[in-house]
Amino acid sequence: MCKKHFSEMLAQIQELTPKQLNALIGAAEQVKNTRTPAVILDEKFAESLACPRCQGQYIRKWGIESGIQRYRCNECRRTFNALTGTPMARLRKKERWLEYSEALADGTSLTKAAERCGIDRTTAFRWRHRFLTRPKENQPCCSGITEIDETYFLESYKGTKIYHRLPRKRGGKSQTRGLSAEQIPVIIVRDRGKHTCDAVLTDRSARGIRRKIGHYISQESILCIDKSRALIKFARKSGVAFETLDNKQRRGRDKVFHIQNVNAYHSRLKEWMKRFHGVSTKHLSSYLGWRRLYERSVNSPAALLQETIFKIHNG
Image 1 (cartoon, rainbow, N blue to C red):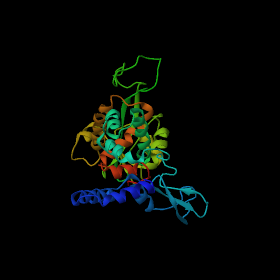
Image 2 (cartoon, rainbow, N blue to C red):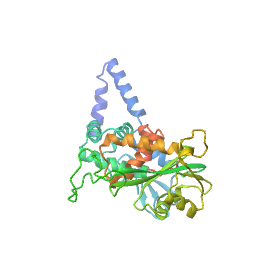
Image 3 (cartoon, helix red, strand yellow):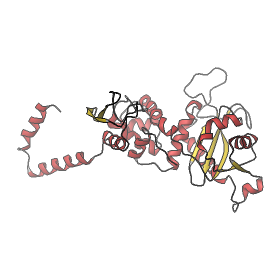
Image 4 (cartoon, helix red, strand yellow):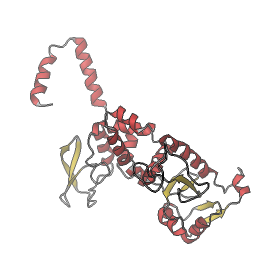
């Protein structure tokens, strides 16, 4: 609001009745106490204030832009804010980010999310994958007794024109029974502390598995493996202790070494995925990160907004 309009508003306050004045004071207090996306981001960024370019610690405030505090590094002489170098940099309509974070927490469809936030459906789709970029990367390190197993998702070219086969409707089904080139493997690792990491495999060999998830598994872990040759070779090459399981051990509820937890996670993941009627393979890793947020009960819009921007170590 410009100074002229603000002065006119102050002049009109004297004409308000006591009831209207109390209503105005209440509305002003409510606005004052409301934590906007800019305030939430600035509070989180201030916890570990450093230059995102040179990691310099000697910085000072340098004005406010778009409601977000700006800083200047005394070492590299560059300016920055909480969004610099993040997936959300230069994304507009910041005042609606909390509403969209709430839509993500609720797992709503693109159409409903767009209606809730008053944005176009294409904008809602673009925001979804910008918001999910960081959760996809925020993977914990698993330790202790750790279960590891593969699951499979049907290959999807959703959103892309294809000519080598007929298109499927609402996810569809595979044209061949059992495992085939149409099935995309996803490796899931889950320890008894409920820390979960995952990866879409383009190479099902031990080397490909190690490249994708090797750095998320502690050397002190004990892997529970369901007699997969690639996983056994991966454990040996990584120098991690492991236990192979036969069918009897797999079913035994009183056994220490089993993969029941990771298989239960597979079931929850696939049931949750059904709401999207087929996820494009190129975006599958983003949805895996989204599901990890669900498992950790990150349902607060403010907490979810912070996880979409900052690197958070979960374990």
